[in-house]
Length: 133
Image (cartoon, rainbow, N blue to C red):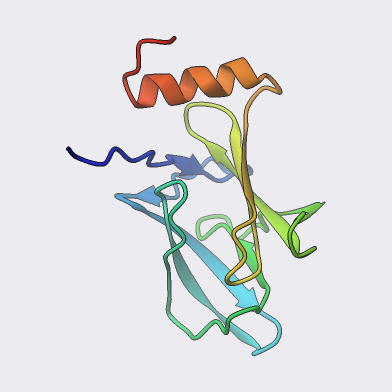
């Protein structure tokens, strides 16, 4: 039996540039603690927390993420319920958005839609071809 994955197709909330490439989401980031800036590649598979970057991001460090196309911040004024670090928000191409914590190692995240849980369940059912939609 194969494992099905929810690969998030994400784009910039400012310029709408596609950020998902294959199973990776490409962003730029600055880590104040180490004064480093560069490209970061996050897993686009929902629930998978793999991170690759052009520089070392220490566990627990907070990054400030930007769109690599328009160089605009994708940080929002919402704080992680698990660790109180700022959250990042990206739009889903099909509608809705994804928020995730900017702290390395924290698993705080959320998928949001039009404010309707039925819309989000419908999206998941369509992705996994379940008969409940």
